[in-house]
Length: 148
Image (cartoon, rainbow, N blue to C red; front, side):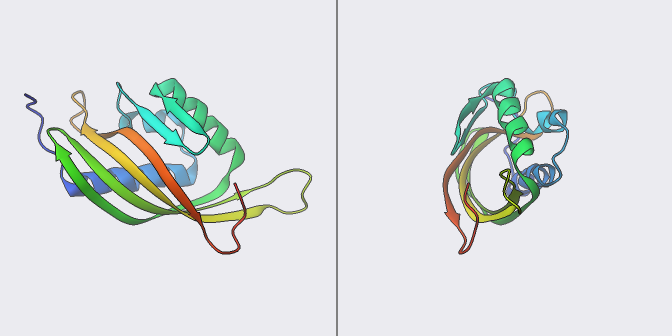
């Protein structure tokens, strides 16, 4: 039985806000470490599944080399289940980013809603909430959006 305090919706919302804020500014890689579980980290994106810190690092380095002027706007966050020290969270985030494919004369703007499921747990080391599982379930392009 865990002696860690149950997670609150406020803590999960603060984690999501910090996560998306860091993505918007292409924060330094190490800035993400306190937001991610040290063990059992699994992240599923349209481009593949990444596990552990090294998996996240690989994904993140590709993303910051591809997309710029990112804006993540949290539209919905709902805790859908609680199991001990873990909560499942359904998220809808509006994602906007620019990309440039040489030799195109202009960049393209991608605008879409991403439907995600997170599993959040409390870190035994820091006592703070961390992402353990991050799944992009689907993405819905806005009209006129560039393509991934």
